[in-house]
Image (cartoon, rainbow, N blue to C red):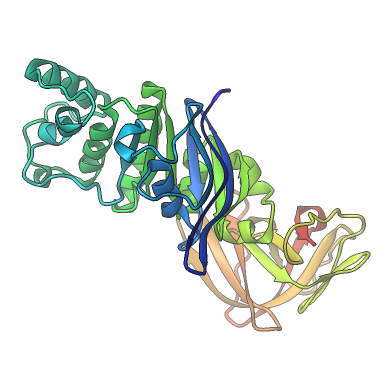
Length: 358
């Protein structure tokens, strides 16, 4: 698949802070790309450099095969949807959407009939038909989000950058808007680069998920691979679904502060600091006297509390070194172990389900 955008060794520093530290990415045409990273990882700076609002210190940016580092933002044909939508409160829905067409520097459209026709088409595309004459203060948050998107799409960009576009919406609306954004992108046939700090949102939205860690791309894979095979302990930590143990790797064991985890031939992924990761939902809770097999790893913990989330129960246990380990039990499966406050339990997982970083 042809690339619409390619960044090669792009850097951006602010004094001693390297916000972008040798970024290499290639975005395919007609795709939905999620960019995930914690606060301060450089997500918004990367978007601003791509859009042209910030100039990189070094490296190259190719958009549709041409270098654009020196091209101003309004000449790049790249759309930008801001987190707070940045709508004009004095304009109607239709007025906000038409603004870019009527006021752009290159080829502004002055024929009101053409503008109305284009607005009508894009309003239908994003599901706002009938709301054209309303003020933006008279519509819901999800509708304002679609107005901001429509204002970008009407100018027919080849790439749309979305800076945490669902962050200002409530939880139920965020879930609905995920499906709507994907459907709108498919109808438009352009690439969306969607920045988010939510691992759930990134995995749900992206055909490809990019994970940004301290100004570098730590992983670029499909959502299933990122979730099941994070390439480093840092990526596993961002996903917020892995228990991580620091320690040292020996020939047959991973030696952690809470015990030795047998590896018996398990291959370590050689990236970053030594770590051992086991996903929350890969752990079972058993009575202390329950037997374990040779293929299982067992530690002990003291039960603290349960947290009910609807589809699952997350249980928290304190280990002997004071750290807290989390266990996720899906209610669609067998009923989870009922734990007594301050009771001691065995926490067990299959050796092959653990990820080892060395």
